[in-house]
Image (cartoon, rainbow, N blue to C red; front, side, top):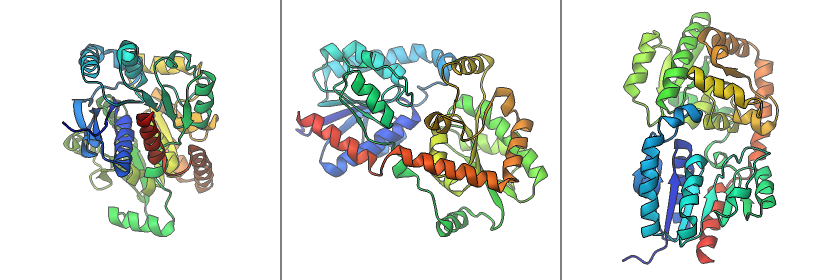
Amino acid sequence: MSTEPRIFMIAGEPSADRHAAMLGEALLRERSLRLCGVGEALMRGAGFDLLLDSSGWSGIGVVDSLERLPHLIGRMRALTAHLLAEPPDLLVPVDFGAFNVRLLRRIRARLACPVLYYFPPRSWSREANYESLAELVDRVATPFSWSEDRLRAAGIQGTWVGHPVIDRILPLDAQELALLRAKLGAVPGRMLVGLLPGSRAMEIRCSGREMLAAARIIADERDDVDFLLSVAPSVPEEALREQVARHRLQERVSLTHGLSTIVQASDLAIVTSGTATLEAAAAGCPMLIIYRGTRLMVLEKWLRRFAQPFIGMPNILANREVVPELIHLEAEATALAERALGLLADQKKMRGMREDLLELRGRLGAPGVSDRVARLCLDALST
């Protein structure tokens, strides 16, 4: 039997899968380890032995998440039994607080290993209360500086490590941008608009359709604009091709793998609210943030605005509106196209937005985020 330490990570959504994969790679650069856990394709590709595949676990808000509840209850029972029967040397929950915190409540008193939480729940909130988390974890690595203060106020050994988006996405200078656009086959002198509908089926249905309808309107108004449509690993490419053809956009839309490529290459991005908005911000890419869903999902989002006035991460982190947010009917194709056309015609406003986003990038910490978290993990193993 191997004597190498075993680290078990739990990532229940695509962004957490990416963070965990980057952390796993950083750990393996430091020393030989056994990486196990719950995650998706990126973790598997980084060398993790996955107990469960978490594809499709995450929902959008309470309403969408409730539909997944019966499945998640079963997965939590299986995970509880495994961790208690075969405790790792270190447990690292990654984000996905609705699931991970409940799991820790079930097992913490009986779990014979330290717990380091990476991306604690509501780390983006300046008002987060972590008193209930204190008895569940030994350490926390958080992406935002104010979250460290909130954690320590609750008696938790919290460390601000920065956000890993800093290591994945860099703004490009003019020469690098020209090379990237040439690689994508972009025509010099034409503008590029990135379309980022998300990675979940609900997002593709609700946001993707309106984005492509808006793209059709923009294409009819301006013959110097092309589009890059993001293809998430969980989304069937053929389904997106059918939608593109339905809107007669085959000559203007390129299906593109790699969200970072799109936000680095685009003059403007239309982005579904979520982690992708922070990735666009890290690239300094001007954007429109949209949120569409069922009536109940939209009602939930509006009600949350009483406590949090913004839905997009760049605006939440800046604590002011840096980029426009369009919810439900505001994000209907005609209205969306009108806002996008207005920005494309106003280069001064676009430059100002880019400058604001690059300033925001500076608040996300220094490069080397995953390496810093890896060192915290190794320190937890040795204590």
